Structures are given as structure tokens and as C-alpha cells.
Image (cartoon, rainbow, N blue to C red):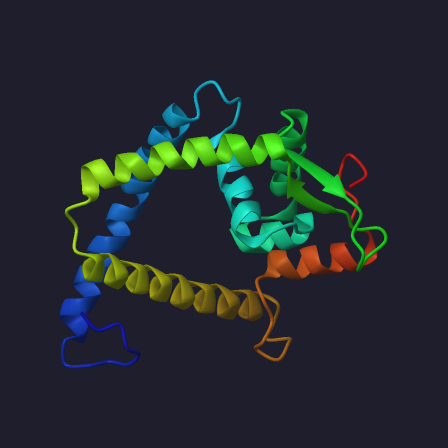
Amino acid sequence: MSVSRGDGADGPAVAGLLHDVIRRLWPVHRVIVRAVERGLAGTGMTAGQHAALDALRRGGPRTVPQLARALDLDRQPVQRLVNDAKALGLAETVANPEHRRSSLVRLTAHGEAVLARVQGAEQEALRRHLGDLDPADVATALRVLDRLGEVFHELERAADERERGGLGNGDDRHNRHDRDDRHDRDDDRGTDGT
């Protein structure tokens, strides 16, 4: 399956299939979140905290606004996720050598161990139940989902620009991330001073 840009002869058929993909995303997302939460039993973690900690594990220490951008969420809910993870001993804040008032969030050794254990169990379940999938099909699915995300982000940016009355140069990021960036520059302290 090609995920190239443009309107080809197969445009109407592809549009119908993409609509089916989008229709399936919500229920699949909900069932995956429920499965993840079952796998987190006993850790004290929520699925949201799992996602935030996974982003830290994959991308290294970050500020809360950087983590919010990586998760495509507003800063405030991410700050709450970080605060809760800190309370569980899974994450900590440390000095940021690049910005005096903006702490970095990183996993603790306990957080690394808990996340490794949880994700090891998740990987084993995926191998057991979905190991028969062709890697090329999975790679295509990833490309299609990435492309959907890119297009819908572009549509969101265009809508944000229209709502602002056409101000800006078209390179603006999401409205909420613009607010986060301004907040990050002004004072990147969270509710707990991080």
C-alpha cells in the first residue's frame, strides 16, 4: 500500500479505507488502554503515566513542556502525570543545565525497573498474540498512522490559524503548544515548583 501524497486514481477507494481506519482507532485505543491498565495493576501507575514514562525512557530527560509536546498534550495534564509519577517514586526532577528555572524530568532507577518489567510483559503478550503478523504489514500500518497524524496536525494548524484571523506565517505549531512555549520561556515551574 502506498502512502504517498496526492490524489491518485484510487483516491476515493483510499479515502473510504482511511475512514474505516479512523473509525476503528477509537475502539481499538480504548481496549488497548484497558489492557495496559490491567497490566499496570499493582504498580500504582495509570495508562497516562505509562505513556509519559515511556516517552522519558525512549527520549531521555525533558522539561514538562517538552514532554507535553512529545505526547501531543497540553502542559497542565502532563504536569499532573509527572507529579503523580514523582509521588510514586517513578520519576524525579533534576537541574536543567540549559535553563535555570526549568527542571528536567527523568526516570528514577525504580521507575526504570518498573517500566522495564511492565513493557517486558507487554512485549511478550504482543509476541504471543500477534507474532504471526508480517513485519512489512506492521511497517505499512505505522507509515499510514504516521501519515494520518501528519495530515490531521496540518489540518489542526490551518484551523488554528483561521481562528486567529489568518495571523502568523503558516509555520505556527498547535495553538496549545504555542501557549506552552510562551509559558516555558516565561516561567517553566509546575505546580510543585518544577
